[in-house]
Length: 214
Length: 214
Image (cartoon, one colour):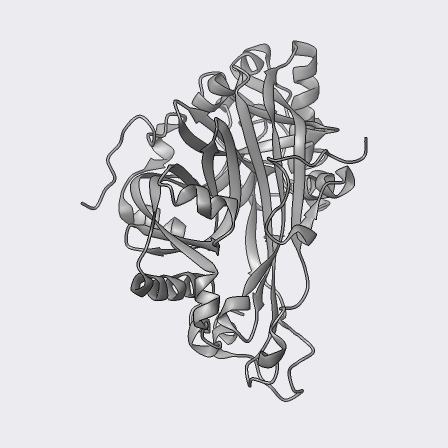
């Protein structure tokens, strides 16, 4: 199965040509980030919590305090919807109407499940690698006490879809001769100069994990 | 009222000191962006849709096709939860456990309402200004037909909270002497070089709206 099934909840209805259901595309978007928005329902009220995730195959790992509302609610196996969105540019058309954004977005539907202690160790590294590859090995490993106060849940992807817009504006033909600039202002997220805290000796160099991204 | 009431749904429970309920702080975070995640519930299933917004006072304007699932669902006045999150940095502690992110996040609770035709015109400009100030005036204004196929909803903020983390890692004292780099790798979103489309004469200069942000 290289493609998610299209059904009522994951089918992209507005501008269907922007919808993608193949796992390769969905994974690429998910793997480009590490912060997702998790939506769930308590007593009919929707909640969104932004949180860190790590992907392994068709599993998204979420972690948090064992006391957090999100973790305690999700571990009951309620339906969750997870979204990851990148804004890649402002699309300036001649008409106000055709202004748009370039973006990559993935929406995932599934349910969260608690995982075994063995899986938990794997999941921690998956999450850590998603944010900063190699940092897990550099850092002081978690103690049993630290592990015990952190809950990790696995969301198996049941359905997913990516929605992607790229390229120039799509103005009406009649507008193309208007004396108005049309095009795209790209947007991208960059890493700045690392800021050491006050507990590093002056001659301590940056860790390899950071050197690889800056 | 310069502050949102704290109640069961908007109170920041994990790391309460990161929670802010004053409107000034909430507005600052909302005004720093223009893409939000909107969560709503249909038949018990949570959905998240990333979409553009504009803020005016305690109102968030959302727009979309009159046919979109989000707009048709929301205009029934169902509860919505809206989140805007910026990731400002990766926080590298000595211990894996104390790794974190710096971020600014706002979560809003409310309900969407349809608006009058007069308000709709105002709302379009509010949304456009949120993305790119001044662009509204540069662009070809919407026709009645374009207005008619676009729905605009107003979400009055009932409750909101900001959650913000800044600054260096918070390592355990016992870890501070470990030979591990600790600090922050800042992250920021930047605009790239504008890409004109194929319908601009060679001597057309960038519009003022774009010049102001790049």
